Amino acid sequence: LRHARAVRRLGSAAIDMCWVAAGRMEGFWEASLKPWDTRAAALILQEAGGRVTAMDGGKWIPENGDILATNGLIHEECLRILRSA
Image 1 (cartoon, rainbow, N blue to C red):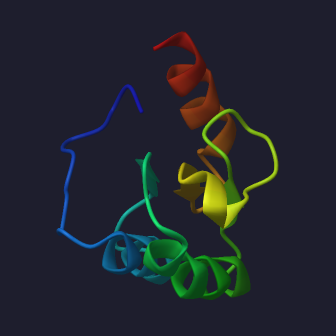
Image 2 (tube, one colour):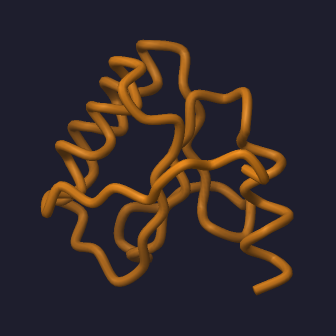
């Protein structure tokens, strides 16, 4: 992430996560989401080989509202950054 060029937001958690699944973005995080914002996209991302957890690294529970979704390669680095914030 030290070499990140930009932070991109498309306005939809589901679209952001699908872009991660497609390899167009490397990661996505958000708090205060509703389950319908993330459930389907989380499945798509996981099937594509990505990783989904809560923002603290714990088990992702859609009803809790927070999510970290990555391509898997940068997940631990994202967790370190979120934990230090």
